Image (cartoon, rainbow, N blue to C red; front, side, top):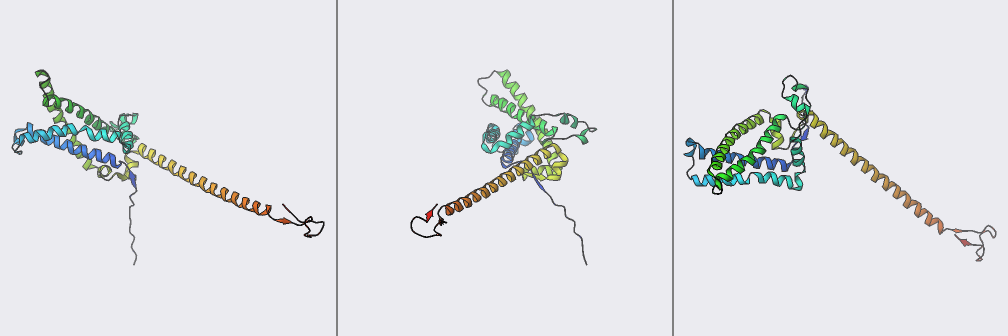
Length: 266
């Protein structure tokens, strides 16, 4: 009795390194704290959920002040090389990105590492950090500013908070709809078939870089092996030459007589 078992092998394809994932989840945690504490300060029905309003205010303020720090540290750290490259990718738009918005042309686009929706989301999140930090600072340390500034800062702060709630909720929803994409930010890798299907241009770039690195390593190993062979051969030739230089040679005149004149050494 025999049975055939069909298995599908998942080839892991690297997407986000450890630094990128730490920065992302640290910022995600701070954003959720800010959204919840902001809601408890602004919405009456949530205000009853917290016992110490001043403590909530303090948590809200310092979480906001900490928000840019993980990104800045990730950018300046030596381990943030891939984060810096990905930020550059998020700021570059291609013709395929524009064609992605049309359902008619979307199936034929060749996307890079990020789709246009992800690029817009990153741009909005980055801008909102700056806006929320500036308006929040005016609201917290309001004495140097006129009343009109304080009123305007409060309006902009509250409006941005509301839009952030919607955008982040959508971001989470889309993440759970595509488990492979979510796994990239949780575990750092995605199935290669997913990368090739969803982001073919990025997949091709990574494969080309990987093949180039492999070819370079093979060439270096071959060069090292050749160098070892040449050095070994030169060493043997040197040893043979040294031995030949010490070999006594008989004088053909006296047939090898050792009278001090017939024998000589090279």
